[in-house]
Image (cartoon, rainbow, N blue to C red; front, side):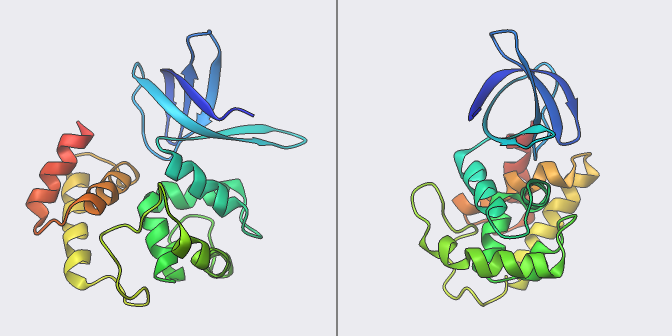
Length: 202
């Protein structure tokens, strides 16, 4: 199985790139975040092998790879749905939704219906609660997992995301970086969060 790829991005489409390795092999990889052609990239990969096809799904961190593999182990959740969840919500967003038992948040991902979202929460909520090591709950410590995200935090994220999209960045490009930054630091206003995002995105 192919678990890691490093090389140069020679072709880039939305959520799919071709990586040319130093050995001269070109791998087509599904990716949840955008990568520019001509740039070097290192990806942790999950290699899906089926009778009629093989697919590679690539992630910047082991946390994303492990989460993807947990998702596709859920009954009724295939690679496309698992990938869509991480691409749409980001690693931290998926962990947060499961921790809060918020199936509606998971339903926002393309191809994930109500029953699938509820099954994900049911199957993974205890596993997520026990996760250690590389996994951590996003956006600070959650005291009560049934308490919805407070409106101030929601407003902060919404304002910052809107500013980024007005600057030409795509939502799927911004959300994973935003979740990463907010898991590392408490931001008091959209201006500070936007500055941090732009430093990471440029």
